[in-house]
Image 1 (cartoon, rainbow, N blue to C red):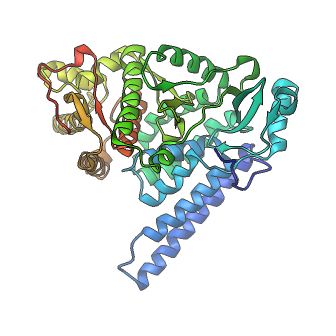
Image 2 (image 1 turned 135 degrees about the horizontal axis):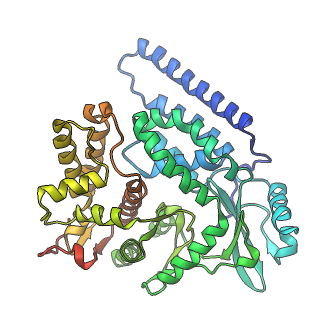
Image 3 (image 1 turned 180 degrees about the vertical axis):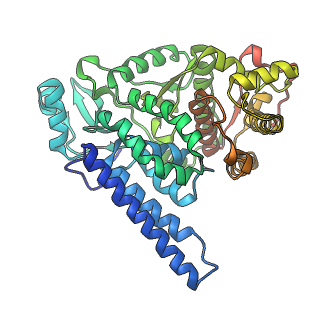
Length: 449
C-alpha cells in the first residue's frame, strides 16, 4: 500500500469554541452557495442543482476532514447509503473512508509519549513518519518489530472528547441533507452517539476484535490480524499488517467470476455467523475495512463499530423477513409495535399505511433470504431499493409523522445489511444465502434474483 501523499495537518481544532466556529463558517459558505445558486437560476431557470451540490459537498467535506472525528464519521456513514444523498455528496464523503488529511508526525509522537512515555522509534524497529491511511477517527502507520510487519492505528487528538458536541453541531447539516424530520433524527442520534463513543475506545476495540476473530476463525477464506495488547492503549492499536488490495483496487485487476463469488460468499458467511450465532455484528461494512490478499483470502481489518443485537429485536426483525409470512394479524401487529414501526399515538389510517409500507420495505430487503442463492449483480434489485427509499423520504405521511419510525436498534442492523448488499453488488457476486433453520421457508427456490 502506498504512503498517503495528502497534505498533512499540524493541528486539529479541539476546543468546543474552535470546532463550533468551524461549523459556523462552513454553514455560512453553504448559505452563500444557495444564494449564488438562486441568483443564477433567475437568469437561467432550467439550471439544475448539480453545481450547488458539488460546491456544498466540497465545502462541507473540507471542513469535516479538518475537524476529523464524529462529524467526518457521520459523513462516511451517509456516503454508504446511496439513495439518501445526491451523488456529489456520496462521491465526496466516500473519501472519508480512505483519504482524510493525515496528522503530521509531531502530533503522532505526542500521542505515543502520552500513552507509553516513549516515541514510536523507541517502541518499534521501523515506523513510517507519514500515515499510510487516514480516515475519520484515526490514521494508520506501518511499523516493524522483531521481523513482523505491523499496522499501528493512532486516534486523532480530541476526537473522543468532542463526540457529543460535534453531533449537536452536525445536526443542521444532517437535517438538510438527510431530508429527515427532527423527531427521527433525535431518536437515532443517541444510538449514533453511543456507537461513536465506543469507536473511540481502542481498548474495547481490541477486546471485540479478538473475540469476533476467534469466533469466526472457522469460516473459509477469511483472515484476521493478530492484536498486540502490550503495544496498544486507549488511543493506539497495534496489529498485524495485512497485505493486499481494497475491493475497488482488486476489482481493477479483473478477477474471475469464481473469485468474486468466493469473496462474496466469505463476506455473506462472516455476517451470517455474527448476526445469527454471535448476536453481535461488525456494523461498519464499508470497503475500507476489507483487504483482499494475494492468496484469495478476505482480510477483516477494523472492529471499531460492533452492534450487540438484543434478542427481542432480533426475533421480531427476522420474523418479518420470512418468505412465507405465516403470522396472524394480531402477532404481526405485536411485532410492528415492538419494532416501533407503529404506536398507540397513530390513527387507524396511519397504522394501516405504515404497516403496508414497512411490509413492502422488509419484503424487498428480505429477497436474498427468500432463495437458496442470490445474484447481487442484479442492478434492477438495487434500483427497486433506491426507488422505494426515495419514495419514502419524500412521502407526506412520513414527513408529517409525530414520531420516529422504527427501533433505534434497526439503525445499525439496516446499515449493516445495506452495506453488505452494496459490497456484494460491487463484487457482482452470486452467493448461497444461508439462513438459520427457524428462518427457512417451507419451500425455497434456486434463482438468480
